[in-house]
Length: 351
Image 1 (tube, rainbow, N blue to C red):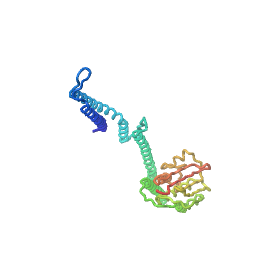
Image 2: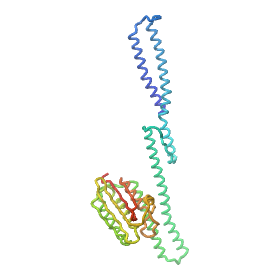
Image 3: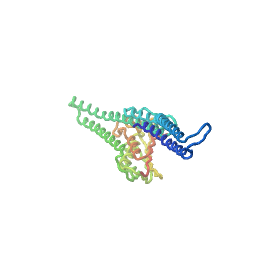
Image 4: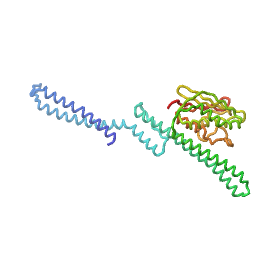
C-alpha cells in the first residue's frame, strides 16, 4: 500500500475507534437509566423501541464517520504528502543527471521544508563538485597532452632529420618527461588527499616549516629570494607527509612567484588554544582580489606561465587547499598591499 492509502486508513480508523466507544457508552447509559415504559407528552415511550431506533441511527452515524474518514483522510494525506512528491520528482531528475533543478519549497518551516532545503543544498554542492571534477579532468587532459605532444614533435624532428644533435634531443625529451612525471605525481597526491586515505598523528608545524625551508633554500638562493622564518612549537594533528607537502608547496609557490630579484618570503607558525596557524607571505606583483580567488583552482597560475624548471604544474595551491580541507582546517589567501600574497592555514590541534 502507498503511504497515502496507509494514512487514509489510519485517519478513518482513528475516527471509528473514537466513534464506536462513544456509541457504546450512550447505548449503555440508555439501557441503564431508561425504564421499560415511560409516559411522555403525546404518548408512551417503550425502551425497546427507543433502543432499536438508536441502533439504527448509531449505525448510520458510524457509516458516515467511516465515509468522512476515508474521503477526508485521502484528501488530507494527499495535501500533507504533496511536498514529498516534489522532492521525489527532483530526486528522479537528479538521477538522470540534471543537477540544476531545485525544489524551492514554499510555506512554513516544518520537517518537509527542512528536508527540501537540505536536498537543495546537497544538489548545489553536488553540482559544484561535478562541475569542478569536469573542469579538473579537462585541464588535466590538456596539461598531460602538452608534454606528450612536445615529445611527439621532437621524435618526428629526429626521425626526419637524422643529422640532428641527439644530445640536445635527449636533454629536451628528458625535461619534458620530468615535467610529465611531476604532473602525474601531483595528480596522484591530490587524489590521495581528497580520498582521506591517511592516518593521523601529532605533528609540529614548526619542524615541518624548518624542513621545507632547508629543502628549498638552494632554489631560493638561486633566485635571489631571502627566507625569514619565525615561530614557536606549533602542535597539530594530521598526516606528517601531507602537511609537509602542504608547507613545501606554500614555500615553493612563494619563492617562484616572487620578485625577479631581491624577493622576500616570510614564513611563521603560531599556536593558539584550539588551532595551529601557518602563515606564508611573499613579495611580488600586485594581484587583484578576483585573481587571488581563483588560485586554488587546479592549473591556475597568478601570473603568466613561467617557462623554467621550477614553474610547477599548476596544482600547488590546489593540493594545499585539498590537504587543508581533509584536515578540517581553513585556508585564507589575500593579496598584500605591497604586492605578493599572504596565505594562512589554520588547522585544529585535535581531531
